[in-house]
Image (tube, rainbow, N blue to C red; front, top):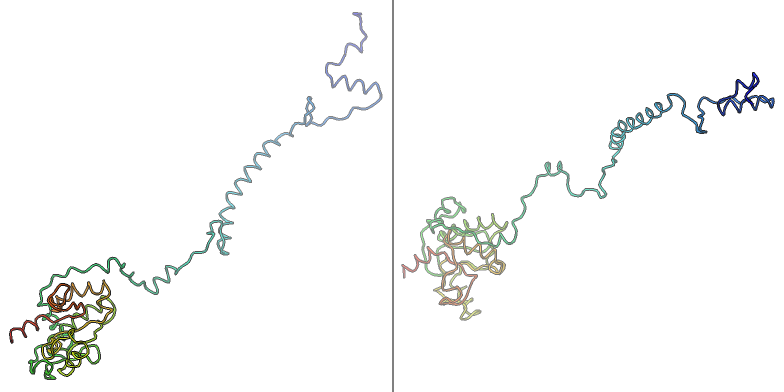
Length: 282
């Protein structure tokens, strides 16, 4: 039918209005809809809620960024930080090193074993006398006496108890010993130096062909020394003596070297200027 009543003219046009009309006919009051409800059944956020949420997140991030360094500083003040090492550092602190000083590292064995290239004339021995390594010994003292029977004023005691040499040889060897001590931190070790005539006879009796004829030994002139085993059996020490000894007039003579005309005696060193002088006398 095309004709309708007046009430029908106001037919509801939405599902909400239809629902409200049905409830009115049933004598029920419609529930008030929350402003946050949506027509599709989902709840919409209250006005401005989205902006509040975003501001809250941003504010939290900013607070965390500002607070992180503050927490780190607080932890550091109590001895712990997020950057602590897994293991504690060892060794002295920089302050301790500055206060105590640092010893010079020792030279490696390879470098220490390398002989020094010392190219100095034998006159260095006389220069060492000028430096007076033995101020109580006169290197120019007159040489009086014979082999194994030198006068007391022709001899000087050296650093090792009971050992002595002719004055000029003693001064030169003391200069070498000073350099040796600077290099190795100790004195050169000797087993023999000047030998009296009676001592030469005793040595000859005990060593036979290994000892010179009494009255002919350079030990009897106070011009020779025999080194301890620790000196000639240690490569770096003996290499140093071999290279530096001649600068002070002391050397292992050719006859005592391997293949020389005499017995092989690497321990035997002689004061060459004195030996040459004695050779001229004879």
